[in-house]
Image 1 (cartoon, rainbow, N blue to C red):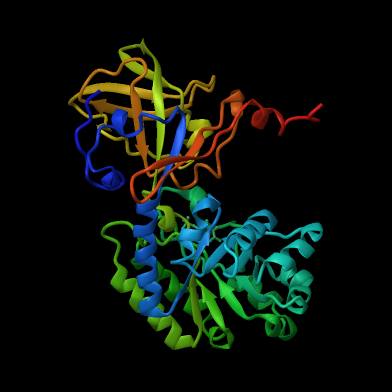
Image 2: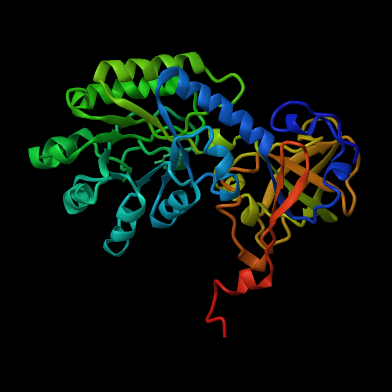
Length: 404
Ligand SMILES: *Cc1c(COP(=O)(O)O)cnc(C)c1O
């Protein structure tokens, strides 16, 4: 396969080089995380916080490859976690920075650990605030409550819409009016919402208006407001000016500190997934290339969201080129990445390079079907590759039994 040079994101950092040469020393399947791309994102985020005074946290559920935390910590104010383990990881691997945690519900057994590692905690319900709020406060944490502005701004991806009717995420105005007491209110340092997914700042503006309508009278009593993640800040074409204006307005109107906690935007377009063709089969006129990488195991969002990931030197299947369906080696019939058009025929051992593979991949993969976990590599700012971690049979085995 002869790839055409592709200088757009997410492949801009590769400068149009031939993958076989560029990645020659890396066994597949493998993730490669591109430090130069992380730095580029970091610079955009740092400029935003310098200009507006907001504070920006890494949402670790999207990207938690802590070997890159030292470099990210130059640009960010800390980490955001979804539970005890991520809280501890942020505390240990981004030392001296802020450690925030939100969970839909905290467990009694983990709470001592949470208060040890976190400095900000956000509760999802007034019941959880009642149960843990005072304890968190006494342990020196700042306490927040997640609000649900009941304002859906996204279409198509219901799985990522925390504002859908019946959602468990965040306190609605009805619950607030019914359950909030002065005692509980007096514990609060801040409020939080997370309602966006890969969205621009117009959706944030709509959401802020909805928040103001439901909860505006309470916001001036807060120290901070956390606008969650889903801000696609580092995507080319994102309306940064509007975001800057909204952050300034929010800070001034309610006299609060503003936090953002993007995951995607921190590591957007900052990784590649390398996989090779194992076989090509044909069925009913469809040519299918079976790869040593799997959608179900190694890029589960491709199936969950679903979406077609960018592929170096190929296009989404159209009229031109050689068409292939790319699929994983597992026995799941639906382990399909998608249909692509190539300038040349695919053959056994060809290397394929998927883009934008740093987020929701290494922290979300699995060993279903006994599939190997891809190794994780770093491409540093000079273009040099180094192996961060490789996995073997034991990593598969040891999660499943007694280690006897
Ligand atoms: C998922 C999540 C984020 C990060 O979302 P991105 O879409 O990756 O930016 C931030 N905060 C909370 C509470 C989340 O659940």
